[in-house]
Length: 227
Image 1 (cartoon, helix red, strand yellow):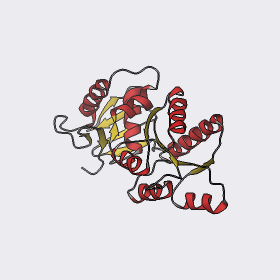
Image 2 (tube, helix red, strand yellow):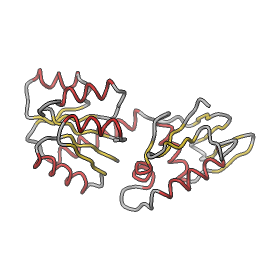
Image 3 (cartoon, one colour):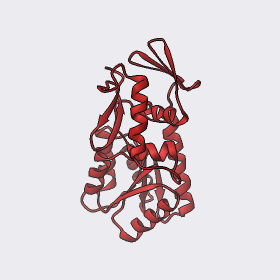
């Protein structure tokens, strides 16, 4: 999973990066709201840890802008402000949870895990999925097109599930490796391209000119249902 930390205090930012990276998360960080907002809107993240009290663009404004731009990843706000009105403002701006400083790293990690689980449940994919002229049966790990069944490996099924959970959105090669292969034992990003080539041969009418498994240059791939 890819996490973004937006925190202007350097010691806190460093501690968060090191703690979360040690848990196997892929972590990026930004030292202010403007840089954090740009990162969150140009790259794909599974969760944002967002400090509230930052100069310039504060956490409330960053969160509101993320939601306005359609970024729906969970946001965990981190702040020393403990007033009820501040917490309400944070949640109303689009945050999913609120953690008061100082906090224990154990509690932080528990909240991160809980938010990621909740978000994944909200993106559940149906057992049967129609893409163009093909039907995917995730329970049987079978793709059927033109009356012909094609078996799907565990990795192929995982790739399609991840794409189907975010239709129309680009999924990075790194995220495929994180989610489908796992943190500790995955090959190079080139492996994803090889799996996509195989999936296109099963899903696409013309694999050389794909309509559904579409390449997003410089990022990864997206799934298009409409073509």
